[in-house]
Image 1 (cartoon, rainbow, N blue to C red):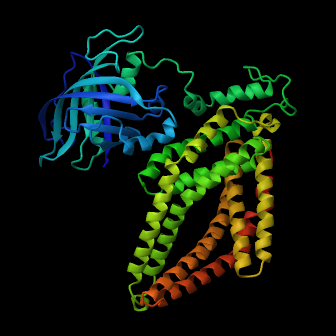
Image 2: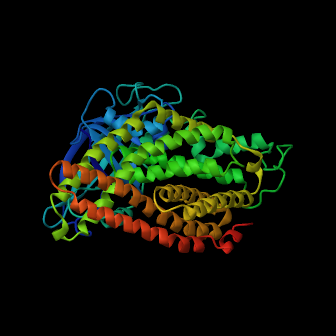
Length: 554
Protein backbone atom coordinates (compact mmCIF):
# COMPACT_ATOMS: atom_id res chain seq x y z
CA UNK A 1 0.00 0.00 0.00
CA UNK A 2 1.45 3.38 -1.01
CA UNK A 3 1.70 6.24 1.50
CA UNK A 4 1.79 9.92 0.55
CA UNK A 5 3.56 12.84 2.20
CA UNK A 6 3.82 16.48 1.11
CA UNK A 7 7.47 17.44 0.76
CA UNK A 8 8.28 21.13 1.27
CA UNK A 9 12.00 21.73 1.00
CA UNK A 10 14.75 23.93 -0.39
CA UNK A 11 18.26 23.02 -1.57
CA UNK A 12 21.50 24.99 -1.31
CA UNK A 13 24.99 24.81 -2.72
CA UNK A 14 27.78 23.80 -0.36
CA UNK A 15 31.43 22.79 -0.48
CA UNK A 16 34.02 21.38 1.90
CA UNK A 17 34.46 24.76 3.60
CA UNK A 18 30.76 25.41 4.21
CA UNK A 19 29.73 25.62 7.85
CA UNK A 20 26.15 25.87 9.06
CA UNK A 21 25.25 28.96 11.08
CA UNK A 22 23.65 28.71 14.50
CA UNK A 23 19.96 28.28 13.68
CA UNK A 24 18.68 28.29 17.26
CA UNK A 25 16.67 31.43 17.91
CA UNK A 26 15.41 32.08 14.36
CA UNK A 27 11.64 32.22 14.03
CA UNK A 28 10.21 29.60 16.45
CA UNK A 29 13.37 27.46 16.63
CA UNK A 30 14.47 26.92 20.24
CA UNK A 31 16.95 24.07 19.84
CA UNK A 32 18.96 22.29 17.15
CA UNK A 33 19.30 18.56 17.81
CA UNK A 34 21.90 16.34 16.12
CA UNK A 35 20.25 13.29 14.53
CA UNK A 36 23.37 11.48 13.40
CA UNK A 37 24.57 10.26 10.00
CA UNK A 38 22.66 8.21 7.43
CA UNK A 39 24.08 6.33 4.43
CA UNK A 40 21.60 6.29 1.54
CA UNK A 41 21.81 4.33 -1.71
CA UNK A 42 19.31 5.30 -4.44
CA UNK A 43 18.74 3.98 -7.95
CA UNK A 44 16.72 6.34 -10.14
CA UNK A 45 14.44 5.08 -12.92
CA UNK A 46 13.21 6.79 -16.06
CA UNK A 47 12.49 6.06 -19.72
CA UNK A 48 15.51 5.99 -22.04
CA UNK A 49 14.54 9.47 -23.28
CA UNK A 50 13.99 10.71 -19.69
CA UNK A 51 10.33 11.63 -19.90
CA UNK A 52 9.88 11.69 -16.14
CA UNK A 53 12.82 14.02 -15.63
CA UNK A 54 11.48 16.36 -18.32
CA UNK A 55 8.23 16.60 -16.32
CA UNK A 56 9.98 17.18 -12.98
CA UNK A 57 9.07 13.69 -11.74
CA UNK A 58 11.43 11.29 -10.00
CA UNK A 59 11.11 7.56 -9.32
CA UNK A 60 13.73 5.90 -7.16
CA UNK A 61 14.48 2.80 -5.12
CA UNK A 62 16.35 3.76 -1.98
CA UNK A 63 17.88 1.77 0.85
CA UNK A 64 19.23 3.13 4.11
CA UNK A 65 17.79 5.84 6.29
CA UNK A 66 14.39 6.00 7.92
CA UNK A 67 12.25 5.78 4.78
CA UNK A 68 13.79 2.99 2.70
CA UNK A 69 11.59 1.91 -0.18
CA UNK A 70 10.29 3.14 -3.52
CA UNK A 71 9.62 6.88 -3.79
CA UNK A 72 7.69 8.64 -6.55
CA UNK A 73 7.84 12.43 -6.40
CA UNK A 74 5.27 14.51 -8.30
CA UNK A 75 5.36 18.32 -8.63
CA UNK A 76 2.80 19.98 -6.34
CA UNK A 77 3.67 23.67 -6.64
CA UNK A 78 6.74 25.90 -6.18
CA UNK A 79 9.11 24.18 -3.77
CA UNK A 80 6.62 21.41 -3.04
CA UNK A 81 6.25 17.81 -4.16
CA UNK A 82 3.97 14.91 -3.35
CA UNK A 83 6.11 11.95 -2.33
CA UNK A 84 4.32 8.63 -2.73
CA UNK A 85 6.05 5.72 -1.03
CA UNK A 86 5.84 1.97 -1.47
CA UNK A 87 7.73 -0.89 0.26
CA UNK A 88 11.01 -2.21 -1.15
CA UNK A 89 10.78 -4.67 -4.02
CA UNK A 90 13.04 -5.75 -6.86
CA UNK A 91 11.09 -3.96 -9.60
CA UNK A 92 9.14 -0.70 -9.72
CA UNK A 93 5.78 -1.37 -7.98
CA UNK A 94 2.59 -1.15 -10.08
CA UNK A 95 0.96 1.26 -7.61
CA UNK A 96 3.66 3.80 -8.55
CA UNK A 97 4.22 3.00 -12.22
CA UNK A 98 0.49 3.39 -12.90
CA UNK A 99 0.78 7.02 -11.74
CA UNK A 100 3.29 7.82 -14.51
CA UNK A 101 1.66 5.77 -17.27
CA UNK A 102 0.37 8.88 -19.03
CA UNK A 103 3.96 10.18 -19.14
CA UNK A 104 5.90 7.11 -20.19
CA UNK A 105 3.19 5.70 -22.50
CA UNK A 106 4.62 2.43 -23.84
CA UNK A 107 8.25 3.13 -22.93
CA UNK A 108 10.07 0.94 -20.40
CA UNK A 109 11.25 2.30 -17.06
CA UNK A 110 14.94 1.50 -16.67
CA UNK A 111 17.68 2.41 -14.15
CA UNK A 112 19.31 5.68 -15.19
CA UNK A 113 21.60 6.89 -12.46
CA UNK A 114 22.74 5.79 -9.02
CA UNK A 115 23.33 8.09 -6.07
CA UNK A 116 24.99 7.41 -2.75
CA UNK A 117 24.57 10.00 -0.07
CA UNK A 118 26.15 10.42 3.34
CA UNK A 119 23.65 12.60 5.19
CA UNK A 120 24.26 14.47 8.43
CA UNK A 121 20.92 15.51 9.91
CA UNK A 122 20.02 18.25 12.38
CA UNK A 123 16.47 18.74 13.62
CA UNK A 124 15.04 22.18 14.39
CA UNK A 125 12.60 22.10 17.32
CA UNK A 126 10.40 24.64 19.02
CA UNK A 127 10.29 25.36 22.77
CA UNK A 128 7.89 22.45 23.33
CA UNK A 129 10.27 20.04 21.61
CA UNK A 130 8.10 19.71 18.49
CA UNK A 131 10.14 19.10 15.32
CA UNK A 132 9.74 21.97 12.83
CA UNK A 133 12.27 21.17 10.11
CA UNK A 134 15.30 19.08 9.25
CA UNK A 135 18.58 20.49 7.96
CA UNK A 136 20.66 17.89 6.13
CA UNK A 137 24.20 18.30 4.89
CA UNK A 138 24.66 15.78 2.08
CA UNK A 139 27.84 14.36 0.57
CA UNK A 140 26.67 12.97 -2.77
CA UNK A 141 28.27 10.60 -5.27
CA UNK A 142 26.55 9.90 -8.59
CA UNK A 143 27.33 7.73 -11.60
CA UNK A 144 25.45 6.09 -14.50
CA UNK A 145 23.43 3.07 -13.44
CA UNK A 146 25.12 -0.22 -14.21
CA UNK A 147 28.46 1.29 -15.23
CA UNK A 148 30.19 1.07 -11.86
CA UNK A 149 29.51 -0.62 -8.59
CA UNK A 150 31.02 2.05 -6.39
CA UNK A 151 32.25 5.63 -6.53
CA UNK A 152 35.69 5.97 -7.99
CA UNK A 153 35.31 3.34 -10.67
CA UNK A 154 36.01 4.39 -14.23
CA UNK A 155 33.05 5.34 -16.44
CA UNK A 156 32.59 5.06 -20.19
CA UNK A 157 33.76 7.78 -22.54
CA UNK A 158 31.77 11.00 -22.16
CA UNK A 159 30.26 9.91 -18.85
CA UNK A 160 31.88 10.57 -15.52
CA UNK A 161 31.35 10.12 -11.86
CA UNK A 162 30.06 13.24 -10.13
CA UNK A 163 30.54 14.33 -6.55
CA UNK A 164 29.22 17.34 -4.69
CA UNK A 165 28.00 18.66 -1.36
CA UNK A 166 24.64 20.31 -0.74
CA UNK A 167 22.27 21.35 2.04
CA UNK A 168 18.59 20.43 2.23
CA UNK A 169 16.10 22.16 4.52
CA UNK A 170 12.75 20.40 4.77
CA UNK A 171 9.69 21.16 6.86
CA UNK A 172 8.66 18.18 8.95
CA UNK A 173 5.24 16.93 10.00
CA UNK A 174 5.30 18.74 13.36
CA UNK A 175 3.91 22.19 13.97
CA UNK A 176 2.18 24.21 11.26
CA UNK A 177 4.64 23.44 8.43
CA UNK A 178 5.01 27.17 7.87
CA UNK A 179 7.04 28.05 4.75
CA UNK A 180 8.00 31.25 6.55
CA UNK A 181 10.43 29.18 8.60
CA UNK A 182 12.23 28.25 5.37
CA UNK A 183 12.58 31.96 4.57
CA UNK A 184 14.19 32.59 7.95
CA UNK A 185 16.60 29.67 7.52
CA UNK A 186 17.47 30.88 4.03
CA UNK A 187 18.34 34.34 5.33
CA UNK A 188 20.58 32.79 7.97
CA UNK A 189 22.32 30.64 5.35
CA UNK A 190 22.75 33.61 3.01
CA UNK A 191 24.46 35.52 5.82
CA UNK A 192 27.27 32.94 5.80
CA UNK A 193 27.53 32.80 2.00
CA UNK A 194 25.26 29.81 1.28
CA UNK A 195 23.06 30.27 -1.79
CA UNK A 196 20.19 28.30 -3.39
CA UNK A 197 21.19 25.36 -5.57
CA UNK A 198 21.11 25.83 -9.33
CA UNK A 199 19.73 22.33 -9.97
CA UNK A 200 16.13 21.63 -8.86
CA UNK A 201 17.00 18.15 -7.55
CA UNK A 202 19.84 15.72 -6.95
CA UNK A 203 18.72 13.74 -9.98
CA UNK A 204 18.85 16.77 -12.27
CA UNK A 205 22.36 17.61 -11.12
CA UNK A 206 23.50 13.99 -11.41
CA UNK A 207 22.24 13.73 -14.98
CA UNK A 208 23.99 16.94 -15.98
CA UNK A 209 27.31 16.23 -14.30
CA UNK A 210 27.55 12.60 -15.41
CA UNK A 211 26.80 13.46 -19.04
CA UNK A 212 23.51 11.58 -19.07
CA UNK A 213 21.46 14.51 -20.36
CA UNK A 214 22.64 15.15 -23.91
CA UNK A 215 20.28 16.44 -26.60
CA UNK A 216 17.62 13.84 -27.18
CA UNK A 217 16.07 14.16 -30.64
CA UNK A 218 13.89 11.15 -29.94
CA UNK A 219 12.18 12.90 -27.04
CA UNK A 220 8.86 13.63 -28.68
CA UNK A 221 7.22 14.86 -25.50
CA UNK A 222 9.68 17.72 -25.08
CA UNK A 223 9.22 18.91 -28.66
CA UNK A 224 5.45 18.79 -28.38
CA UNK A 225 5.47 20.63 -25.04
CA UNK A 226 7.61 23.44 -26.42
CA UNK A 227 5.71 23.71 -29.67
CA UNK A 228 8.87 23.42 -31.75
CA UNK A 229 7.62 20.33 -33.50
CA UNK A 230 4.40 22.05 -34.49
CA UNK A 231 6.20 25.15 -35.73
CA UNK A 232 8.47 23.11 -37.95
CA UNK A 233 5.51 21.23 -39.36
CA UNK A 234 3.63 24.46 -40.02
CA UNK A 235 6.57 25.83 -41.98
CA UNK A 236 6.64 22.63 -44.01
CA UNK A 237 2.89 22.63 -44.72
CA UNK A 238 2.68 26.32 -45.63
CA UNK A 239 5.97 26.57 -47.45
CA UNK A 240 7.31 28.98 -44.80
CA UNK A 241 10.96 29.71 -44.41
CA UNK A 242 12.64 29.90 -41.00
CA UNK A 243 12.34 33.69 -41.07
CA UNK A 244 8.57 33.43 -41.22
CA UNK A 245 8.22 34.56 -44.84
CA UNK A 246 5.90 32.51 -47.01
CA UNK A 247 6.76 30.47 -50.00
CA UNK A 248 4.30 29.13 -52.52
CA UNK A 249 2.24 27.39 -49.82
CA UNK A 250 -1.44 26.58 -49.88
CA UNK A 251 -4.16 28.98 -50.89
CA UNK A 252 -4.82 31.53 -48.16
CA UNK A 253 -1.40 31.22 -46.57
CA UNK A 254 -0.02 34.36 -48.18
CA UNK A 255 -1.96 36.84 -46.06
CA UNK A 256 0.09 38.45 -43.34
CA UNK A 257 -0.70 36.85 -39.99
CA UNK A 258 -0.20 39.98 -37.91
CA UNK A 259 1.18 40.43 -34.43
CA UNK A 260 -1.26 37.96 -32.83
CA UNK A 261 0.01 35.10 -34.92
CA UNK A 262 -1.72 32.60 -37.12
CA UNK A 263 -4.83 30.59 -36.44
CA UNK A 264 -2.62 27.52 -36.44
CA UNK A 265 -0.53 28.97 -33.62
CA UNK A 266 -3.66 29.73 -31.62
CA UNK A 267 -5.37 26.38 -31.97
CA UNK A 268 -2.28 24.21 -31.58
CA UNK A 269 -1.31 26.03 -28.39
CA UNK A 270 -4.81 25.48 -27.02
CA UNK A 271 -4.74 21.78 -27.94
CA UNK A 272 -1.28 21.46 -26.41
CA UNK A 273 -2.49 23.04 -23.16
CA UNK A 274 -5.48 20.71 -22.84
CA UNK A 275 -3.29 17.66 -23.44
CA UNK A 276 -0.89 18.94 -20.78
CA UNK A 277 -3.77 19.23 -18.31
CA UNK A 278 -5.01 15.70 -19.05
CA UNK A 279 -1.56 14.19 -18.56
CA UNK A 280 -0.86 16.18 -15.38
CA UNK A 281 -4.22 15.25 -13.85
CA UNK A 282 -3.90 11.54 -14.62
CA UNK A 283 -2.13 10.65 -11.34
CA UNK A 284 -4.50 12.87 -9.37
CA UNK A 285 -7.52 11.04 -10.80
CA UNK A 286 -5.95 7.68 -10.00
CA UNK A 287 -5.33 8.84 -6.42
CA UNK A 288 -8.89 10.16 -6.09
CA UNK A 289 -7.81 13.75 -5.44
CA UNK A 290 -10.92 15.96 -5.00
CA UNK A 291 -12.11 17.70 -8.18
CA UNK A 292 -9.49 15.95 -10.34
CA UNK A 293 -12.05 13.91 -12.30
CA UNK A 294 -14.03 17.04 -13.08
CA UNK A 295 -10.98 18.99 -14.25
CA UNK A 296 -9.74 16.14 -16.41
CA UNK A 297 -13.16 15.74 -17.96
CA UNK A 298 -13.33 19.46 -18.71
CA UNK A 299 -9.94 19.35 -20.46
CA UNK A 300 -11.12 16.36 -22.50
CA UNK A 301 -14.27 18.18 -23.54
CA UNK A 302 -12.40 21.37 -24.37
CA UNK A 303 -10.06 19.42 -26.59
CA UNK A 304 -12.91 17.73 -28.42
CA UNK A 305 -14.72 21.05 -28.81
CA UNK A 306 -11.62 22.64 -30.32
CA UNK A 307 -11.49 19.94 -32.98
CA UNK A 308 -15.16 20.54 -33.81
CA UNK A 309 -15.09 24.35 -33.69
CA UNK A 310 -11.84 25.06 -35.52
CA UNK A 311 -12.36 22.97 -38.64
CA UNK A 312 -10.82 25.73 -40.77
CA UNK A 313 -7.54 25.07 -38.96
CA UNK A 314 -7.41 21.31 -38.38
CA UNK A 315 -8.56 18.70 -40.88
CA UNK A 316 -11.81 17.24 -39.58
CA UNK A 317 -11.12 14.02 -41.43
CA UNK A 318 -8.19 13.45 -39.09
CA UNK A 319 -9.58 14.95 -35.88
CA UNK A 320 -13.07 13.40 -36.02
CA UNK A 321 -11.89 9.90 -35.00
CA UNK A 322 -9.76 11.44 -32.25
CA UNK A 323 -12.79 13.41 -31.11
CA UNK A 324 -14.73 10.18 -30.91
CA UNK A 325 -12.14 8.74 -28.56
CA UNK A 326 -12.20 11.91 -26.47
CA UNK A 327 -15.96 11.57 -26.23
CA UNK A 328 -15.47 8.02 -24.94
CA UNK A 329 -12.97 9.20 -22.31
CA UNK A 330 -15.23 12.06 -21.20
CA UNK A 331 -18.08 9.57 -20.82
CA UNK A 332 -15.98 7.24 -18.67
CA UNK A 333 -14.91 10.15 -16.47
CA UNK A 334 -18.46 11.47 -16.51
CA UNK A 335 -19.86 8.49 -14.64
CA UNK A 336 -17.76 9.41 -11.61
CA UNK A 337 -18.19 13.17 -11.99
CA UNK A 338 -21.97 12.97 -12.47
CA UNK A 339 -22.20 10.82 -9.35
CA UNK A 340 -20.23 13.43 -7.38
CA UNK A 341 -22.48 16.27 -8.55
CA UNK A 342 -25.69 14.32 -8.04
CA UNK A 343 -24.71 13.13 -4.56
CA UNK A 344 -23.84 16.68 -3.46
CA UNK A 345 -27.13 17.93 -4.84
CA UNK A 346 -29.21 15.28 -3.06
CA UNK A 347 -27.34 15.59 0.24
CA UNK A 348 -27.94 19.36 0.21
CA UNK A 349 -31.59 18.84 -0.69
CA UNK A 350 -32.15 16.37 2.17
CA UNK A 351 -30.45 18.75 4.62
CA UNK A 352 -32.96 21.47 3.62
CA UNK A 353 -35.97 19.27 4.52
CA UNK A 354 -37.33 19.90 8.02
CA UNK A 355 -36.77 16.96 10.34
CA UNK A 356 -40.49 16.53 10.77
CA UNK A 357 -40.73 15.72 7.06
CA UNK A 358 -37.80 13.28 6.95
CA UNK A 359 -39.73 10.07 7.33
CA UNK A 360 -37.69 6.90 7.56
CA UNK A 361 -33.91 6.40 7.33
CA UNK A 362 -33.51 8.90 4.49
CA UNK A 363 -29.87 9.79 5.18
CA UNK A 364 -28.82 6.16 5.47
CA UNK A 365 -30.69 5.19 2.29
CA UNK A 366 -28.98 8.03 0.38
CA UNK A 367 -25.56 7.10 1.78
CA UNK A 368 -25.94 3.43 0.76
CA UNK A 369 -27.08 4.46 -2.71
CA UNK A 370 -24.17 6.87 -3.13
CA UNK A 371 -21.50 4.42 -1.94
CA UNK A 372 -22.75 1.69 -4.26
CA UNK A 373 -22.67 4.01 -7.26
CA UNK A 374 -19.31 5.41 -6.18
CA UNK A 375 -17.67 1.97 -6.15
CA UNK A 376 -19.03 1.22 -9.61
CA UNK A 377 -18.00 4.56 -11.12
CA UNK A 378 -14.56 4.50 -9.48
CA UNK A 379 -13.81 1.05 -10.88
CA UNK A 380 -14.93 2.21 -14.31
CA UNK A 381 -12.63 5.25 -14.30
CA UNK A 382 -9.59 3.24 -13.24
CA UNK A 383 -10.31 0.54 -15.81
CA UNK A 384 -10.42 3.20 -18.53
CA UNK A 385 -7.11 4.78 -17.46
CA UNK A 386 -5.42 1.39 -17.24
CA UNK A 387 -6.70 0.24 -20.62
CA UNK A 388 -5.03 0.14 -24.02
CA UNK A 389 -7.64 2.47 -25.52
CA UNK A 390 -6.64 5.37 -23.28
CA UNK A 391 -2.95 4.80 -23.95
CA UNK A 392 -3.61 4.77 -27.71
CA UNK A 393 -5.54 8.05 -27.40
CA UNK A 394 -2.65 9.79 -25.64
CA UNK A 395 -0.18 8.56 -28.24
CA UNK A 396 -2.49 9.76 -31.02
CA UNK A 397 -2.76 13.22 -29.46
CA UNK A 398 1.02 13.51 -29.13
CA UNK A 399 1.41 12.42 -32.75
CA UNK A 400 -1.21 14.94 -33.87
CA UNK A 401 0.68 17.78 -32.23
CA UNK A 402 3.95 16.56 -33.66
CA UNK A 403 2.54 16.48 -37.19
CA UNK A 404 -0.71 18.52 -37.12
CA UNK A 405 -3.23 18.07 -39.95
CA UNK A 406 -3.31 21.77 -40.83
CA UNK A 407 -5.72 23.26 -43.35
CA UNK A 408 -5.19 26.47 -45.34
CA UNK A 409 -7.00 28.50 -42.70
CA UNK A 410 -4.23 27.69 -40.23
CA UNK A 411 -1.98 30.20 -41.98
CA UNK A 412 -4.46 33.07 -41.74
CA UNK A 413 -4.55 35.66 -38.93
CA UNK A 414 -5.77 34.20 -35.66
CA UNK A 415 -8.40 36.91 -34.94
CA UNK A 416 -10.11 36.36 -38.29
CA UNK A 417 -10.44 32.57 -37.98
CA UNK A 418 -11.20 32.64 -34.27
CA UNK A 419 -14.08 35.10 -34.67
CA UNK A 420 -15.58 32.99 -37.45
CA UNK A 421 -15.40 29.85 -35.34
CA UNK A 422 -17.00 31.45 -32.29
CA UNK A 423 -19.81 33.05 -34.29
CA UNK A 424 -20.49 29.80 -36.12
CA UNK A 425 -20.93 28.01 -32.79
CA UNK A 426 -23.10 30.87 -31.53
CA UNK A 427 -25.49 30.48 -34.46
CA UNK A 428 -25.79 26.79 -33.67
CA UNK A 429 -26.53 27.63 -30.05
CA UNK A 430 -29.16 30.19 -31.03
CA UNK A 431 -31.01 27.63 -33.16
CA UNK A 432 -31.05 25.13 -30.30
CA UNK A 433 -32.27 27.67 -27.76
CA UNK A 434 -35.14 28.67 -30.06
CA UNK A 435 -36.03 25.00 -30.55
CA UNK A 436 -36.03 24.40 -26.80
CA UNK A 437 -38.20 27.43 -26.07
CA UNK A 438 -40.72 26.32 -28.71
CA UNK A 439 -40.85 22.71 -27.48
CA UNK A 440 -43.81 21.54 -25.38
CA UNK A 441 -43.22 21.28 -21.64
CA UNK A 442 -42.12 17.81 -20.63
CA UNK A 443 -39.63 15.30 -21.97
CA UNK A 444 -39.36 16.96 -25.39
CA UNK A 445 -38.34 20.25 -23.83
CA UNK A 446 -35.96 18.54 -21.40
CA UNK A 447 -34.15 16.90 -24.31
CA UNK A 448 -34.06 20.15 -26.30
CA UNK A 449 -32.71 22.11 -23.35
CA UNK A 450 -29.99 19.52 -22.80
CA UNK A 451 -28.95 19.84 -26.45
CA UNK A 452 -28.88 23.62 -26.06
CA UNK A 453 -26.70 23.22 -22.96
CA UNK A 454 -24.14 21.20 -24.92
CA UNK A 455 -24.14 23.85 -27.66
CA UNK A 456 -23.61 26.58 -25.04
CA UNK A 457 -20.66 24.70 -23.61
CA UNK A 458 -19.08 24.30 -27.06
CA UNK A 459 -19.59 28.00 -27.83
CA UNK A 460 -18.05 29.00 -24.52
CA UNK A 461 -15.03 26.76 -25.06
CA UNK A 462 -14.54 28.19 -28.57
CA UNK A 463 -14.59 31.72 -27.13
CA UNK A 464 -12.16 30.78 -24.36
CA UNK A 465 -9.77 29.30 -26.91
CA UNK A 466 -10.02 32.54 -28.89
CA UNK A 467 -9.08 34.83 -26.00
CA UNK A 468 -5.36 35.14 -26.91
CA UNK A 469 -6.44 36.40 -30.35
CA UNK A 470 -9.62 38.36 -29.56
CA UNK A 471 -8.84 39.57 -26.06
CA UNK A 472 -11.45 41.11 -23.78
CA UNK A 473 -14.42 40.75 -26.17
CA UNK A 474 -13.93 36.97 -26.21
CA UNK A 475 -13.68 36.91 -22.41
CA UNK A 476 -16.93 38.88 -21.99
CA UNK A 477 -18.73 36.79 -24.60
CA UNK A 478 -17.62 33.54 -22.94
CA UNK A 479 -18.82 34.87 -19.57
CA UNK A 480 -22.28 35.62 -20.96
CA UNK A 481 -22.57 32.22 -22.62
CA UNK A 482 -21.36 30.54 -19.44
CA UNK A 483 -24.39 31.96 -17.61
CA UNK A 484 -26.66 30.35 -20.17
CA UNK A 485 -24.76 27.09 -19.82
CA UNK A 486 -25.01 27.17 -16.01
CA UNK A 487 -28.75 27.77 -16.09
CA UNK A 488 -29.27 24.93 -18.56
CA UNK A 489 -26.89 22.77 -16.53
CA UNK A 490 -28.95 23.29 -13.38
CA UNK A 491 -32.03 22.29 -15.36
CA UNK A 492 -30.35 19.10 -16.59
CA UNK A 493 -29.12 18.30 -13.07
CA UNK A 494 -32.74 18.53 -11.98
CA UNK A 495 -33.78 16.07 -14.68
CA UNK A 496 -31.08 13.61 -13.61
CA UNK A 497 -31.83 14.22 -9.94
CA UNK A 498 -35.49 13.31 -10.42
CA UNK A 499 -34.44 10.03 -11.98
CA UNK A 500 -32.25 9.26 -8.95
CA UNK A 501 -35.04 10.22 -6.55
CA UNK A 502 -37.43 7.83 -8.29
CA UNK A 503 -34.82 5.10 -7.86
CA UNK A 504 -34.35 5.92 -4.18
CA UNK A 505 -38.09 6.06 -3.53
CA UNK A 506 -38.54 2.66 -5.15
CA UNK A 507 -35.77 1.13 -3.05
CA UNK A 508 -37.23 2.66 0.11
CA UNK A 509 -40.69 1.34 -0.70
CA UNK A 510 -39.35 -2.16 -1.35
CA UNK A 511 -37.54 -2.07 2.01
CA UNK A 512 -40.71 -1.01 3.78
CA UNK A 513 -39.32 2.42 4.65
CA UNK A 514 -41.75 4.59 2.73
CA UNK A 515 -40.83 7.08 0.01
CA UNK A 516 -42.56 10.24 1.23
CA UNK A 517 -39.39 12.34 1.64
CA UNK A 518 -38.00 11.35 -1.73
CA UNK A 519 -41.35 12.24 -3.30
CA UNK A 520 -41.21 15.63 -1.62
CA UNK A 521 -37.73 16.21 -3.04
CA UNK A 522 -38.95 15.10 -6.46
CA UNK A 523 -41.61 17.80 -6.38
CA UNK A 524 -39.06 20.41 -5.37
CA UNK A 525 -36.82 19.43 -8.28
CA UNK A 526 -39.75 19.77 -10.67
CA UNK A 527 -40.38 23.28 -9.40
CA UNK A 528 -36.70 24.14 -9.68
CA UNK A 529 -36.60 23.00 -13.29
CA UNK A 530 -39.69 25.07 -14.07
CA UNK A 531 -37.97 28.11 -12.55
CA UNK A 532 -34.95 27.62 -14.80
CA UNK A 533 -37.20 27.35 -17.85
CA UNK A 534 -38.90 30.64 -16.95
CA UNK A 535 -35.51 32.32 -16.45
CA UNK A 536 -34.03 31.17 -19.76
CA UNK A 537 -35.58 33.84 -22.07
CA UNK A 538 -34.23 36.63 -19.89
CA UNK A 539 -30.74 35.15 -19.55
CA UNK A 540 -30.59 34.32 -23.24
CA UNK A 541 -31.69 37.83 -24.23
CA UNK A 542 -28.72 39.29 -22.37
CA UNK A 543 -26.22 36.77 -23.74
CA UNK A 544 -27.42 37.16 -27.33
CA UNK A 545 -27.12 40.94 -27.57
CA UNK A 546 -25.68 41.92 -30.91
CA UNK A 547 -22.99 44.12 -29.35
CA UNK A 548 -21.22 41.11 -27.83
CA UNK A 549 -20.95 39.41 -31.20
CA UNK A 550 -19.99 42.61 -33.03
CA UNK A 551 -17.08 43.11 -30.63
CA UNK A 552 -15.63 39.76 -31.68
CA UNK A 553 -15.12 40.76 -35.30
CA UNK A 554 -11.53 41.96 -35.97
